[in-house]
Amino acid sequence: MLLSALIVLPILGAVGVGFLPLNGGQVKTAALTLASVLFGLTLVLMVQFDPAIAGLQFVENLPWLSELGLDYRLGVDGLSLPLVVLNGLLTLVAIYITEPTVTRPKFYYSLIFLLNSGVVGAFLAHNLLLFFLFYELELIPLYLLISIWGGAKRGYAGTKFLIYTSISGILVLAGFLGLTWLSGSSSFDYNPALSQGLPIGPQLFLLAAIVVGFGIKIPLFPFHTWLPDAHVEASTPISVLLAGVLLKLGTYGLLRFGLGLFPEAWMVAAPWFASWAVVSVLFGALAAIAQTDMKKMVAYSSIGHMGFVLLAAAAATPVSMVGAMFQMVAHGLISGLLFVLVGLVYKKTGTRDITVLRGLLNPERGLPIVGSLMVLAVMASAGMPGMVGFISEFLIFRGSFAAYPLQTLLCLVGTGLTAVYFLLLVNNTFFGRLPSQFSDLPMVTWAERSPGLVLAVLIVVFGLSPGWMSRWTEVTTIALVRDFPIVKHQIFLQEAPKDTPALPS
Image (cartoon, rainbow, N blue to C red; front, top):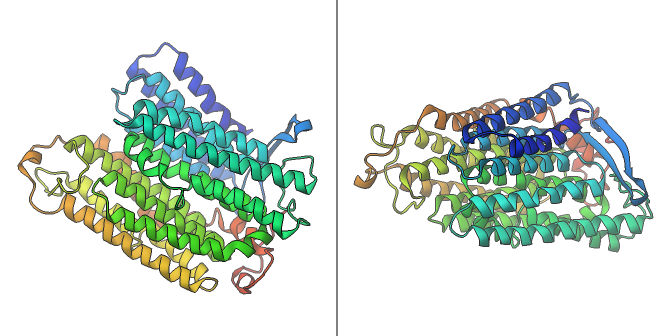
């Protein structure tokens, strides 16, 4: 019942935090305690998880509304485990960095725990309708967190997010319903064999609905426009969760339900997906270069870096698939660190405008530790060796080049552009002479620095020892593409280890 505990405890915590007679400080202490417990449970799950098994572990299967095909079926494998742990970590970070003076704290922390429950449930659900319910559950808490605690245009940003992600859910549900109906199945339990026997035309139609639905969530160009607005208006803790975890629902869904349920149609459409990835990567990078708001620049960078996952999925080789999972976790850590640091800069200076800020790396009167961590974060995002971002991008490009050499090379250009816009950010903001208006900045305490330091350590540790992360996901991701219908390439069997077990259907 460990998986159910990860879903139910945040809901009970939301109720407890919301209704227990606690004052402001006590509410945050209670929220931190519960978030620590939840993160601890994800670590227990990771320790008990057997990385040598490709299929589901800790399976929980209870009848619910069986006449509708909806059963309570949970399980965890190498595709979901890293994201469950990441969600627990970043939820703890988001609660920790929340200001003690946050208004309506009970409602605020209750919504964060409901968001946590919905995200974990989506990663663990192995019934299509159950996944959809959790996928939609996180929608309302995040909308309220943006609309109530956001910036000046929070209403506009929250409504735009709600509309876009509602359309995403409708398309995903339509794909699920169509697949189950056309396959003649009476159950919505996850089954990779559902599309077998369907003509390629209906398969492509259903796959398009699912890919576009998750493409909105990721987001990929041209469905990206909700993301910069949401990030700019959201508070720093919510931006950490949005970039670090919520976007991964889209990439996870793309792999689990797009590639996993429609292998034949996926291989037919894969060249188009690879080209789409190039457009998204280059657009995200070029748009980031044009920004002067630090937060909006980081938001556009997410669009580009999520495009790498689509390239890896399009290639669908064992190496690229491991890289896709690595990229999801790496982006969660790096974007989380970037938003934490941008939030600190804004808190201490009152602006995020890179045309105004200068010299913040000044060791006496500036923000030297924040600046040093920012340099590390942008180096990781640009794929510098020794950082987790280098490992993920190297695996993606190494695994994708044999299948799509041109698209891979163009995405490599996007990596170069990442260095350009983050060099502009660091050079303009942290180097040069510190202006007089920033000469007496408030001191950054160790309590404020600690979340960034923790994320920075993880970024370096996983960059130097990537096996500590890849061992949890490698067997599952390789098995996911091992039995793929080989349409154009023979590289799948060449790259896959001979002793890797196949993923049971």
